[in-house]
Length: 237
Image (tube, rainbow, N blue to C red):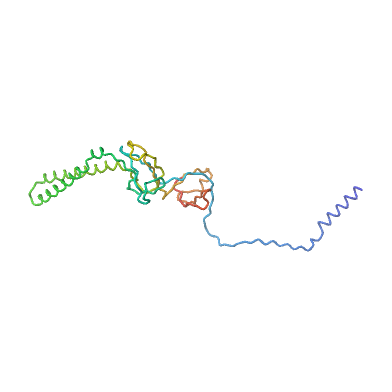
């Protein structure tokens, strides 16, 4: 009985292997595109983490003591606040210090500058006509130069009462001080960043180093902002 079953099974297998395929004609078409061979870029995506920083950033501290006064933003018509745009050379905060201003004597040194300038011009005119000696002319010139330096120094001293951005940017930190309170010298007044140019520090596995070169273009994308792509260049390895 067992031998009969095995023989029947063998016959069925042989018939299945040697039988006709039933006339099924199967043809599989794979779509392809043809393009001329040429050099072109090959992009590679690297998933990593890094910190984007502004190329320009600065923390501004008070250079002199004075009574705090937060100035008005000309662009908004209200006092400056965090997130506002600031301009180079335009003060954000002013520290009033009447005693300091009095010691600078800005009006006196300005008057001295004007007087010495006129005296020098008069001596120069007389020298051209032979009315004074060269030494007298040089003495008048020296007094004029000293007066000019004195006036410039007075302006520098008074400028210490203003907290002024050294470049255009955005206020990213503005510590709160009560209006009119005395602020000591050296206190943090504001922090400014310029986001016009950014740089990104990233750490990469050693295997990528052979595929990255200085000057190579790069596109940086943030997973939380998939539609915001930053275009840049590799500047340092």
